Amino acid sequence: MKAVVLLSGGLDSATVLAIARSEGRACYALSFAYGQRHGIELDAARRVVESIGVDEHVIFPMDLRLFGGSALTGDIDVPKDAADAPGIPVTYVPARNTIFLSLALGYAEARDAEEIWIGVNAIDFSGYPDCRPEFLDAFQRVIVNGTRSGVEHGLPRLIAPLVTMSKAEIIRRGASLGVNYSMTHSCYDPDVRGLACGHCDSCILRKRGFEEAGVDDPTRYQTPTSG
Image (cartoon, rainbow, N blue to C red; front, side):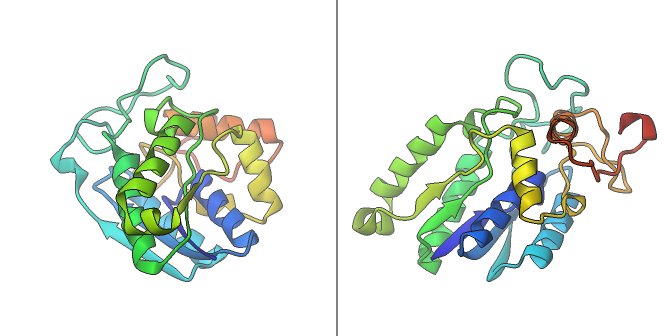
C-alpha cells in the first residue's frame, strides 16, 4: 500500500514515518521549503529519510513569507516560556496544514497512493486549530467530494496516528521502533549553529515529553542550563 507521509524533520513526523514503515507502507515523503525561519528542519528531514527509508522524497518549494502573518514566516519574535499560555500563538502559520494537505493530496493522486499520513497532535500541542480531529474529518470530506480518487474510490484516507497521544507516548512509540531522535529538529528559533533555544513552545513540549517518557533527550540546546 502506498502512503504519502508529511515529513517536517521534527519529532512527530519522524515517528509517523517510522510507524508507516513498520506497518508495511511504501512511503512517499513530502517536505516543504515554505520560507520558514527554521529551515534547518529540512536538513533533519533528509537525515530522517536516509535513516528510516522511503520510496521517494519530494521537497516542495513555496514561499509563505509572501503572506507573513506568523512568527515562523515573518519578522515577529518567537514567544519564549509561554507553552501553556491561552489562545493560538503567533507561531501559527495561516492555513498551513490546509495548504500542506492539499499539496499532499495532489501528490497522492499522482502516485495512486491510498493514504496520507500526518503527524498532527491535539494533546501536547500549541493550540493550532489545524491539528484537531475536527479539521482532519473536514479535510477527509474534501477528499471524498473534491477529487477523482475520492469520488471513485473514497481515497486517499487521512491517517493521523499521533492525534490523541501525549508527547511522552509518541516518544516511547518512536523509541520502540528505533527512531533516532537526535536526527530530528523541533525548535522554532534555533541559533546559527542549529542549536535549540530551549524556551519556545516546541522546545518546551519536546523537553517535557522526553522527561515524562523517561527517555534521554538527545537535543542540543544553546546553553547547558536550558537543557
